[in-house]
Image (cartoon, rainbow, N blue to C red):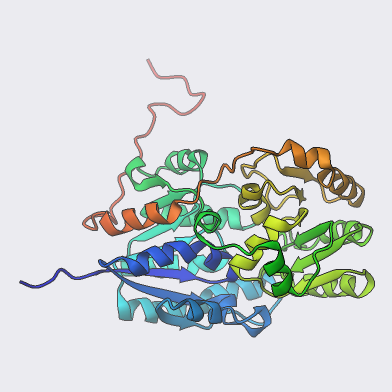
Length: 397
């Protein structure tokens, strides 16, 4: 009697950020006896300028099915647009050759439009993680919503996000509340203690230790319009400052130069091109403050009750826990928020808080659904029943 064939599941990763979220789902899928896993790597992962982070995937031992060179050496929105096109060409060949049963995508990076478009043309069902969230200050918001409508299975981080995906017309049985998979690290990964983290980074972590994560605000024509206030505030802030590189978006090279210039003029300022997931989460665990406009301040910092100063409009609209202090991109307001966030009173007020983005069991839910969902007719979505009248319309007699 022949053995049933394994279910082919392809997982796309483009950068350090989404790989840190995908690590535990990849671990679960790779260990499942009914799955043939293939990882498709593209974008910043293959860029020496952004740390050549594909090496981390190789060290972890996940099976890399394809390596798609597509990231242009550019700092413009035109470069971003061309990157999508180049990625589509490479992905068309890779996915046509392997023909997975399911394609797993995550979040909202613009590069993810490429695999979603190719999968649509090749009739490959798409599963999507982290739909239904909101970040109005980035094109990520539109990308996330586009991926949601292209996808056939959804894994949301919060109950509110699940309701939002269903409100977009997705059938409820397709939409699963899993939690954010990045939080699985907090439950399942061995984070570094203070001594090990100090040794690994080569820094003393003298308090106050402030982690800075700032990315281009891609919804604005000038993606760095809010950066002046951010860097001006940090230049006048005491303490040890640890920067991580921005995302590979339009304006990222200019931000890197701004960061380097600040490090040259401000004592105790350190820059890291990339920090692997374990090191980064361990740093958040032992830091005194996270400042910037990164989603990690919204989604993961809450697991450590870490004070966060969220600056500007990039994360506007996201659900957040009480550890987040929102401020406009104004230097004075940022400095005031930093002082408040570093106060013992604010830190003590966060005792016992919970993270709205989950409890660290997302990978198990994602794997269970991906390995059991019937594939027959998965591509065919039922339309949402329309109301009898438009909002505000008076019914005809």
